[in-house]
Image 1: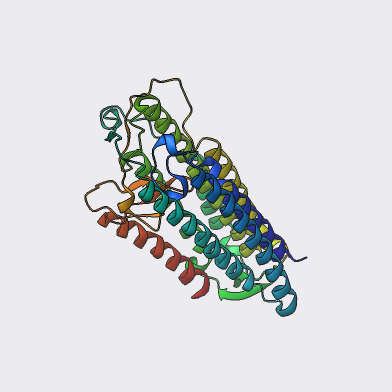
Image 2: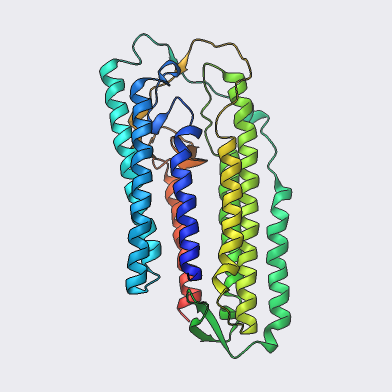
Length: 361
């Protein structure tokens, strides 16, 4: 089994586990992205669609693993591995979408919101007394990036005249480029870009996101939201540090001319470890805890019309840049906000920078 196949299998297994447990860690008032009253959380339609979704996801995961292994053994093309994972994501979204539509239909047919008092709860102290951003958690990423720069400057005179700027799945260099500042320090530029982008996203979560506070339990819901924001920012900054560590390891391979079959692991393993830790932390805290607060008798506003396909939020009247995901972990963009386009442009620019620096030389 090659390193590429092992990594692909591990990543697919992680994705499968996450897809299977998401219905359990999603807030009960938004099953499969559909806003429902709390008293309908255990409705037979919701329960049956959860079982059907898990059955479909499990079967599709097994089939995809078998097909991917056969294609790789026949063709030997590692490119098929990430393509198979993308295809699997598409299939899983299809399973989600079917469940979303079935629950929407049951909600409409059964009049689940009839006679209920809908309301919107806000935490005004998020503007007057916001939680502190965990700037200290940015220190590891900055230290790793600075260390990369210092090591690179010291090593530059002794670097090979031709640098390996890309390694194949077997660790053998597949592209080389003449030594230059742009080539040698290409991954430093990536470190800076990734750090800037993800720190910006973490700051946007703190200062430009809209909390989804439960009007039935506004006090405990607001308290949970603050704690979850802090955890998410710390997890994101920890991920930044591990991405930068992976870039440092890859830079060392390039600067020393080292050829090893384990080269892909130098980059992938730190990032994959950070992703697993972040997912576990966020999943364990993705649902509000019952603090015994008295129920106000109010329920969430039925705002399904702003959610396209159950996953994509588009509301031009909402000035928030980020909103809590309906299905999954963390936040998603408000695609009705023009600043969302700027953020997506930043992501595209960073990917373009990586491609230009690593493959354009």
